[in-house]
Length: 214
Image (cartoon, rainbow, N blue to C red; front, side, top):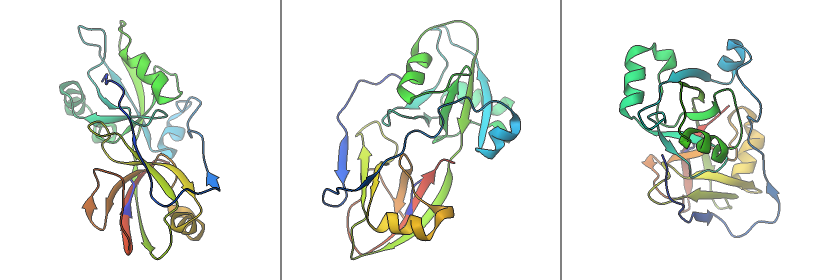
């Protein structure tokens, strides 16, 4: 099965073209570029929820954020501030690792811009809209090329993320399974039951699990 489900200095990506270079690429822009907080129904539909966190003495919220995908921020670890929020709020609003940050104080945009907003000291609470991933499981049978490029930043990325979907087994899976398709920015969680900490390699049958964001 194949599953995709802080201030850090810049580090080079381990960008892996899983197959030889492809010419026909399928790219998509970040899905959430406008405010998702118009109403609670819209939040639920996108598997989103809203939280309000206090700022610390340094003027920043206590968040551990993963920023290896410049388009999206993601919760990287359970900090004391996040644990405290979860203890005081219902499970429907619990913050979890791999949850994606899609708004900061009502502003949506690329992850790098929202990261700067979180890192800039200020006063008052911080309101975030976060999005939970869902799990997609797919089985890809070789021979044949996967047709994806997966990125991974050593020491910083929680899991590899899909940068490009081109012609290949993954694109064929998407056509045959439109309700379980794999997209750019999905996270590759495991291959054949083995959790991934680098970009995927190998042949044969790939049973993969991915983290997918609506």
